[in-house]
Each structure stands twice: as structure tokens, then as C-alpha cells.
Image 1 (cartoon, rainbow over the protein chains, first blue to last red):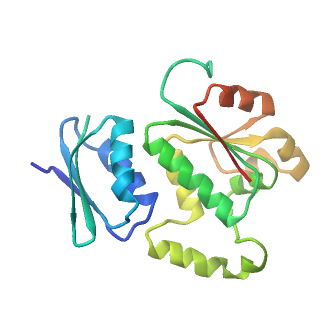
Image 2 (tube, rainbow over the protein chains, first blue to last red; image 1 turned 60 degrees about the vertical axis):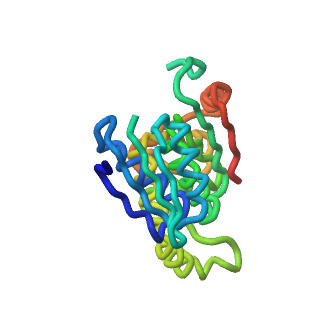
Length: 74
Length: 140
């Protein structure tokens, strides 16, 4: 169900948002992106980005200090 | 284009200092706002104008200046690109860069000294853009 994966581990703000924006631009509407990040700021940043841009945040989870976000492109 | 027409949210940012911290804050906020789908306008004035020079590499302020390279390395280590790469990224994301016409004269800078894609504006046009913006920030 995940179409594209993006690894933002080791990147601090604002780089995850920059990379997510670039990646989502290359994707088809309705396709699903899974992002993993370890910047604690991304926990709030990615949901804020999703609600601002209208992309659907389908799932968030935290595993071993990594944050996973599953995003469906608008 | 009329700056007050309804469209995406707009951000107008004045950058009046050219040190590394101010430079990076500008490109971070610029790229993030563009990533959030906002229409971003960065107006560079006084020492901020320096940042629009081709291949400009801003330095840390005062006594920290000699440690700029070390700091850049540290930033690279946490996934943050150099100022020039971030400026290119901003451009790719649609961020607009403006140079203050008065500062251009005062600093003796010519259009060809600046990176591609910069427009030269006066304060009125910038304020016109800012008046139609949801967010106005001053970095200086």
C-alpha cells in the first residue's frame, strides 16, 4: 500500500519538509508516501505540513526513536 | 499581478543582515513556507543584500567568524545543506528573491553580481506585497 519511501533520518528541520515536498511533487495523486525521520521536531512539523498542503496523513507511529508518517497525496 | 488577490497564503520576509545565522534562518523559513504551499517573498536589504551575490558564503558573526567552516560541517552532519544549495532549493520551490534598489546603489552592486532570478524592487512594491501577505517577518 506504500508506493514510495523516503528516508529523512539524520536530517534536522527544515530538511525533512524540503525533501517531502520535492518527493510528493513527483508522485501521482492518491499514491502513498512513507517517511521516516528522527528529528523530534518532525513529530509536529509533518502533521502541520500535511494539514497546510491538504495531503492526507494516514498514519503516524514512533518506533525506536524514529517517526514514521504515511501520507496520501492529494 | 495584484498582490491582494485571493490565492495561496503569502509570506513576506525582509532580510537585513548577511551573517550565517540570519542567512540560514532566511532560507530555512523560505523553503519551509514554500513546502507548506505558501507564496514566499524574500526582500534583501542593507547587509542582507550581500546574500544575493553569486556564490556568497556567509560567515558567522564577530569572534565566531573563524569557526564558520567547522559550523558548516556540523550542519552538513545533521543533513542541512550549504547556504548556496539552500538558496537554489528555495528557487526550485518557487521562493521569490528581491534586491532592494537603494541598497544596490549604496553597495555598488550590479544585476550581474547577483544570482539568477532576482528582481530589483523599491520599498513601495515590497510593502505592496507585504500588505497582501498573511505573514510578515523581519530578519535582521
